[in-house]
Length: 340
Image (cartoon, rainbow, N blue to C red; front, side, top):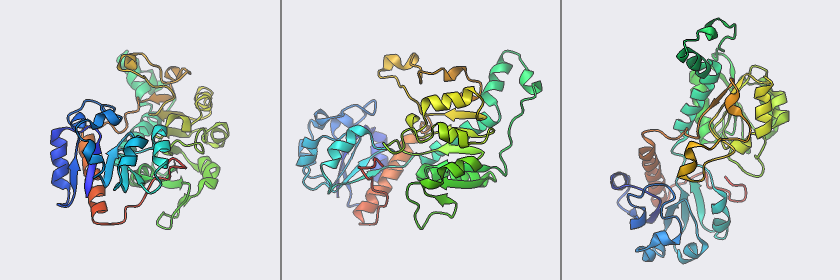
């Protein structure tokens, strides 16, 4: 099985990938992508310079870009792997032109994102950021001001989106001694009894103390956590968003926090991002002043950014490629019409 790897990788991780693969799996990385700095380096047909002949031989492509002209030359292509979670809009249209090609995400970062989600939840529930900032000024008032932290043991965790990340959050919730409820678009026979379809969202929000949003961003999920959803939540609820910013309505979230409609929120995914390296030091994540809210903990979309990130990606990709080579079932193909 021939794999055309069109995503930045360094020599050490390429060697690690080769070491994990079955003998029948051959991986070719064009020079543009080897030791490249940044995920967008080489993106587009120009990145194939010196490797054009490999396109026609590829059974599998690993890439975060798709060009119809390139895909049309890939006569043997059966599988396209996006090396992270989610399907950017710029990939959906070109890939949809080739319905015979199965598209998969690589969910290597599910546990890291789940850990970060719990860090945000606990930071809000325990007022960690607020107390840290005060004590750095010598201010001990959070100890005496009457606003206590929240205990989570025995409470209910509600998970909006029960994919790989949601399942990892649920496992951790049970280890913490919480009850778990979850909703997903289409529960399967393998799902626990606590998983319902999206029709149970409002009821789940009303019963949950900690709410984790893990849905992909699609036309159906955009703004799904809006004003009505916040009205259904308990006043002491903590919301954590590790999905995509617009899954949670921006203004509704700000108002719920500003008005004290919920206890607080931990936010890792946002509504505005820097477009260039120069903008990284001065781009506000929202048109609304979330940074002024004491009950919001802000994180710059870094839940998956851990020391082991590339090792995790390589091990997950190797497992996927070996399963494909062995003709094992590889569940979870992306539905491009739905966006996940």
